[in-house]
Length: 43
Image (tube, rainbow, N blue to C red; front, side, top):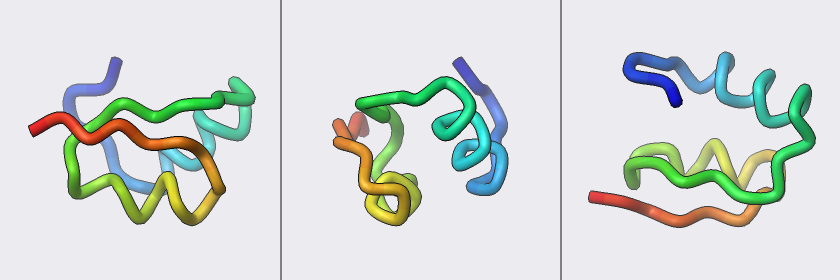
C-alpha cells in the first residue's frame, strides 16, 4: 500500500510485481490503462 505515490512509482511496482489488478483512487485510472492492468476505482 502506498500513501503518497507518483505514477512512475506505480508503473514500476506493477511491472516488478507482475500485478493483475490495481485498486486505487480514480485519478490512477490512466496509470492502470497505460500498462493494461485491470482497475478498481475507490473514491
